[in-house]
Length: 472
Image 1 (cartoon, rainbow, N blue to C red):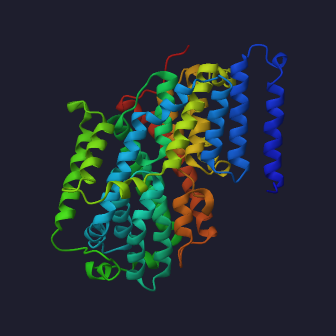
Image 2: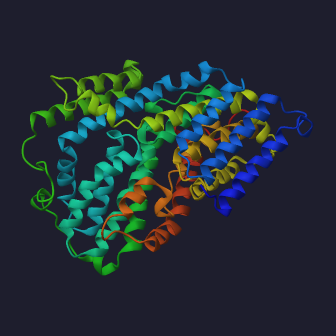
Image 3: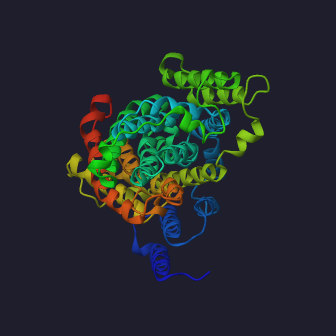
């Protein structure tokens, strides 16, 4: 494998840093475990940035290196894979497979967009439907794939209205990415953030707490983004032309019925999904952990008598590499915190920084990080441990800082390769061009960053997450 200049630059920089860290006299106040942790962390980060090697392979190698050198124990490394949030994600994917088998997505699309009479109504009804899918399908790539047949049906129904098709091709991945913050299972990065907060601060964010904080942000940012997509890709005359997409038009391009009575399997699936979501949202009342609720739902969804998908088929949809990546990077976060490396990295920051300025920097860096680290989970693995440590040292609430960083990292629209949903829709015939994407990102990046900052400073404090924390 031949490395490019950029890749060689990053790797040489990481190796040089490791060599400097290896000399104890260079950092007399830094223990051996902390130096090893920083070296492994630097190498893993540069490998994520500069090499085509699989992210999960790099993370597992980093976790193994930290275990072999004694920085963390083998029990710590393996226990991360048994965390409740990992089980929540596994079971959520089985439930999503059951939903996908029934064709409910086509029915939901016909119900919502069938009432649209203007282009703006079509855009916002589609946006609302995509936001709702964050409760049913975990991870952004899964939601983008589930929504793809709906997009294709809409594109064929619109026929010759090419700019509207381009607009929808941009709208689907944009809303999928920005609305992921609505739920804990919306992205693997959320689970990494929750685990880092638990390991470093003892704060545990559950499904309900995340929903309370994330859903309002998801709704506002998604609908604002929908307006930006509409205004940057269509002209006024195109927006004024009426649209009418009937159920019959959608049925032509769907393999399952989009109207009429629900089948027995569809009815069972709707009832099961509604029950699981209600139980997730009412956790403070019954005290059953979300992971246990998800496990019950997955068992029912895969049962021979009541289920709509086989257990083996459902488990095949689980992104096992993502789960291994989360486990390994969680172990890296534990090493950063327990070895003192994270505290040393942020020890030179000024402690008198105003919270609004600290959060502004966090949001700006997290928004731009996709230009360097394309994996959203990798971005959270690198940024969140440092953000939490820095927040604790400057008197900012670590929960607010971690949430702001994770939410801002949801923007990754600059290039087609910046996120899997963006790349998926970019490859479709008649889709958008890189120029369309750049025009959108130039407006959307500052807008979404501003909305996240506004929520962190004004809305989340009203919901129980203050900006100020305790200074050490």
